[in-house]
Image (tube, rainbow, N blue to C red; front, side, top):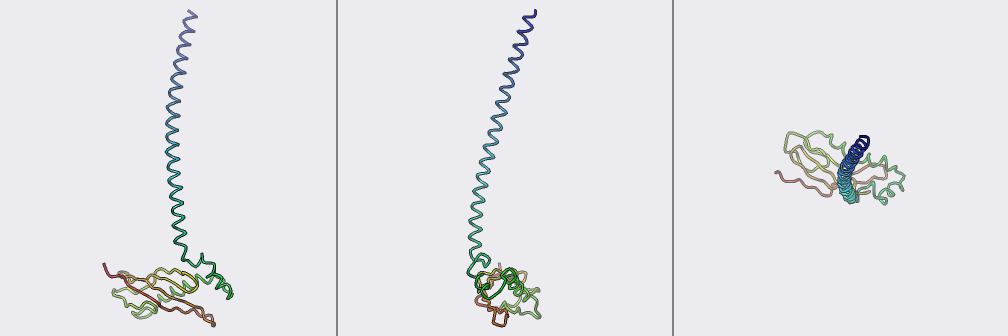
Length: 167
């Protein structure tokens, strides 16, 4: 009787161990598949990040903050570029406050009830600016030059401009 009991216990233990082994193996395989999928996603994300970093570098190419020569131009004249660049942008945005229908820089009159306003400004280097303008319905772009005179005055000069045709 004791021998049969030990035999039953041995068979039960053996079945239990086989069940645990099969169950653990399937769980392990599932986790391995999940890890492989996660690693593939991580690789795709890393590739996307590299692609976006390259694209970002291309976008930053014509930008005064990344142009050491343009920054040196101002620094040689004693300007603090961290204050000067926002000042130049602010002075251009201040031109949005005007009386009447004619913007001081934008050569177009508004064709809607709104005023023409400069929306976005990008300093390309120590001499050039591109800007976006709109009256709410129609919009266009400007190419400006700027200079700081000997009297420390900021002067803008409109070089090129265009308005997109209505759609």
